Length: 414
Image (cartoon, rainbow, N blue to C red):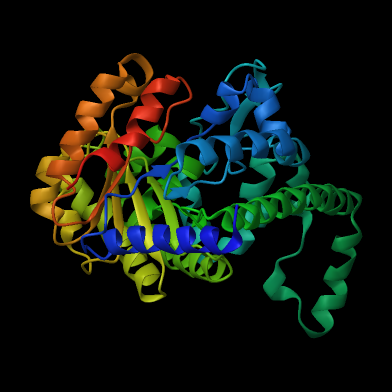
């Protein structure tokens, strides 16, 4: 491919997406390729191979991107963390060879990793809490860090009394294991950068820089579990709210720092516990939205573009989540009615979605084409829309259906 042609195509794709985000009418509706392992499955790879073979995974995704010609793509290496999970001895997932079969997807384990009475410890000293309690619970490589001294006590003569802790055999072992894990994570990161540079040269921009969690999901997913966080809303309201505020600052600062180093300024934020079926609208207004809005505003102020992926049905939240600056974020909806979302949010956020996963997996190309036409003509009108699957391209999607989705943006005008 001619370098100048590829550069021009890259610029055109970036402008198309940027116009959509800014609620301007692009030359056509943009479409993004986002999946876990569809390209790998199509190439005959099982899940274990997809999570461990960086090179082959990159090759399969490159082939698919060149065939489908999306306006942006999500890096295929995002879920290829098998070797790093091995090195960490990670306990919050099961994955091929570690709890699931070679041809099974990795699975999240909904468990309690933080005890309810430990909110006070997190609020007082998050770093100390992570080192002493949280990290040793979620990965074998971290076991031994609980023997480290309290870091703020390392001053003057007291420092010398605490230094022997760093020579404790368990601490030394932990740092050795973490060095190995860090080296593997660095290898993965190098592959991701190399792949992104390769795709840039071919004319395709990446659809996300870094990923983040909403403060409520931070605790619900990774600390307290679904049962724990649900009970905390009733039994530990004040502690939970204080922890959410603190997490909003921690997560925003980290995401801004990481996002500044990445060429793509889109920040992917999957939303797990905001769904209508989990909490009431009143609870959403109290527990979920305030800290998440603080985070969204912090990212926007830093020049980043939040891509909030509202999983499941969040239709009752539309009016509430409209309270952000216009033209600065993408709201990707899995199940919400996009026609209603367009009415409420059309002057606020760029909408993304939402070809049903079931249709892509079991429907016909004609079904997909008709659905995409409806979205393009109704939701794409006046700009502010990006076509995608409801949750990206499911691994089980039929190839002809995927091709129909990507072809639709060239057939129909908003």
